[in-house]
Amino acid sequence: MLRDSFGRVATDLRVSLTDRCNLRCSYCMPPEGLDWLPKPELLTAEEIVRLVAIGVERLGITEVRYTGGEPLLRRELVDIVARTTALAPRPQVSLTTNGIGLARLAGPLAAAGLDRVNVSLDTLDRETFVKLAHRDRLADVLAGLAAAEAAGLRPVKINAVLMRGVNDHEAVPLLRYCLDKGYELRFIEQMPLDAQHGWRRENMITADEILATLQASFDLTDADPAERGSAPAELFLVGGGPARVGVIGSVTRPFCGACDRVRLTADGQIRNCLFATDESDLRAAMRSGVSDDELAERWLAAVRIKKAGHGIDDPAFLQPSRPMSAIGG
Ligand code: SAM
Image (cartoon, rainbow, N blue to C red; front, side, top):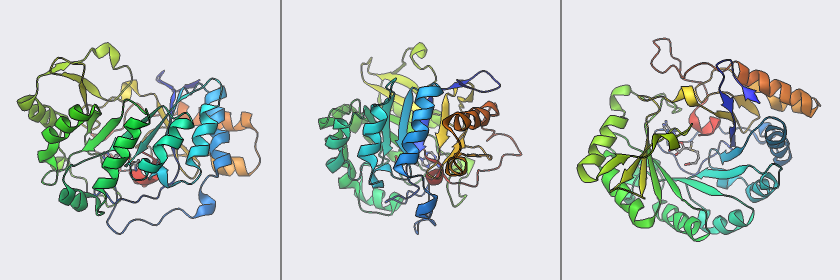
C-alpha cells in the first residue's frame, strides 16, 4: 500500500500523458504557450502502462485518471486506456480533458473501457471563452460533451474555474446548463499553479463566494457528507436532488487530511502532492534497467514522505516550479 507517515493511503493515480495543450487558459499558462517537454523525455506508452500496472497490481491503486496537458493530444490514448482497463484487478479509469476532440474519440474511448470523463468548461459565452482560453474552440468543447454523454461516459462531470472579472458572472448559467444537460458541475477554486505566477489570493473567487452566488438562485442542501469520502468536492443537492453541484475549495477549504492521490508526470516523476517541491524520478530508474520490485520500492518511498498539507497558507509557501499543465491536474 502507498501509505504515508500520517496514515493516508494513496489509491487514486493521476497520470499526465503530455504537458502540451491546445488551449491557453490564463489560470494555467501564458497565451504563447510553454516550452514543451522534448519527446525523448516523455514516457512511452509502454513505460506508462508498465508503471500503471505496478501501481494497480502491487501498490493498491484502484482509480487511474489520465490527464495532462491535454490527454486527447496523446496519439496512443485509446490503446493506453484499453491496456489499463485490462489490468487485474480492473481499476476505474477516467479522463480529465478540455473536450476538444472528444466528439471523435468518445466512442473509441468508451469501447476501450473508459468509465468517465471530467470536462473543463469555464464559460458558455464564445467571446469569454476566447478571452480566457485564447482559442476559439467553445463549439468543439460542447460537441465533445454531447459525444461523451451519447457514448455513455456518464455521469459527465464538468470542472469550472471562475476568474474575477472574466467569467465569475457565469456561475448560475453554468449550473443551469449542466442541470439541463444532466452533467454534474464542480467549481474549483483557482490555485497558485499557473506558469506565469500570476495568482493572487485577493483575485480568487472563493468557495464561500461561489456558494453565496448559487444559493441566491438555487435551493442547495448538503448532500450526505458520508458520501464525500476522500473526494475534494463538497457536494450539494440542487432543488432537493437528485441533481448535484460540487464546490472544491482547494485553497480555502483544503482537504489534504483525506487526500488519497498520487501523481505521475508525463516525464515519469512521482509527485506525492500537486504542490510538492520534490519528485521521484521513475523514468531514469526504469531506463537504467531496474526491476518492477525496485520501481515499486521507490514509489512507496516517494509517498511515505508526503507532507501533511499543501501549505498555501504557510508564509514560507513556494509555488512548485512545474505549472499545472506539466504536473497533470
Ligand atoms: N487539459 C485538461 C483539461 O482542460 O481538463 C486536463 C488538464 S487541466 C490542467 C486539469 C484541470 O485543472 C482543469 O479542470 C483545469 O481547469 C484545472 N486547472 C488548471 N489550472 C488551474 C489552477 N491554477 N487552479 C485551479 N484549477 C486549475
